[in-house]
Image (cartoon, rainbow, N blue to C red; front, side, top):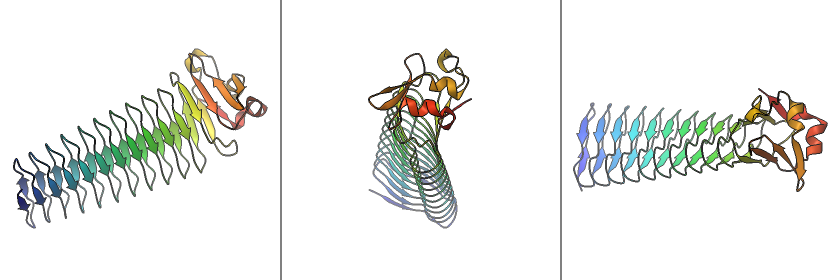
Amino acid sequence: MATIEGSAFDDFLIGSRFSDVVHAGAGDDFVKGGHGADTIYGEDGSDLLFGDEGDDSIFGGEGNDVLFGGAGHDSLFGGEGDDVLSGDNGDDILSGGAGNDVLLGGNGDDTLQGGAGDDVLQGGNGNDILQGGAGNDILEGGNGNDVLQGGDGNDVLTGGRGDDILQGGAGDDVLFGGQGNDILAGGAGNDVFVFHGGGGNDLVLDFDAGSDMMQIASDINGTGVASADDVAARATTVGGNAVIDLGHGDTITVVGVTAEDIQSDPNSYFTVA
């Protein structure tokens, strides 16, 4: 194991084939870890940090940093500033910290934590966990069976392909499960649940007709629906819960709501756009 020390200037630092510890120091630095399980500290400045091969731990520190995990199961911590974190291959942990960060999971079963700020989280391929934290965040699960948790703020959650769990948390959130059989919970706030064609059999856990809304695509799956009344007419009660038939095998089950509730006031439940 080698320890590599940067300077107060803009450094270009390359690790060895062993497991290195790199302290970049002040300045806007470039660091490439090389082979081995490296620990890289960007410290001050806006740094460009590559883990390369091995299971690396990378800390951006202060400044607007760019962190690439590379191959291996990496842990990336953005720290202060508006950072970009890319896990690439492997089962990675990405934590943005303070600032408005962009987190890209890549391949593998990743955990992405936005932290404070208005963050963008993209899980990529694999079964990922995305946690927006504080701020108005955008979460995109991608392929795989993902868990998306918006946290505080007005968040936009898109599950993508797979059987996903979307939890909006506090704030006025938008939840779109995408393809697959998804579970949606808006949490506190005025939430919008979005449904397009080919979505699968989705479950809405906590719909509040006084504050939430389900947005249905016009003519979804060729059903010809054009109004809230049209959608409400497709609802039946099964096991005490409303089940809405959207055609082509797609359904929405709304827990704690009956078809009679919906059909008595469709405009409190649906918009069609």
